[in-house]
Image (cartoon, rainbow, N blue to C red):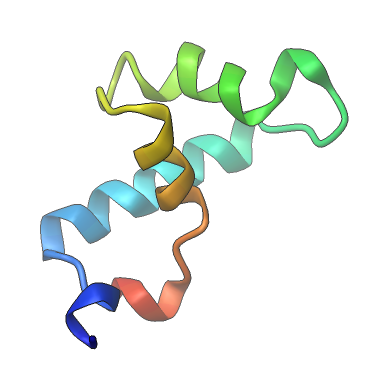
Length: 66
C-alpha cells in the first residue's frame, strides 16, 4: 500500500528531529553510544516512544517524509 510509506506532517517533523538527535550522538561500534543508549538517554525523555518505533524512525527514508 502507498499509505504505508506516508506519514502525517507532524510525524515527519518528529522523525526528522529524532534522526538529528541520532546523528549527533550515535557512534557505530561504541556500546556507550549505540542506538539503544541514544534512545534511552536522548530521544525517549524528549519524545517518549518505544524502542521499536525509534528504530523505524531511524530507518525512515527521506522520500517517505515528504
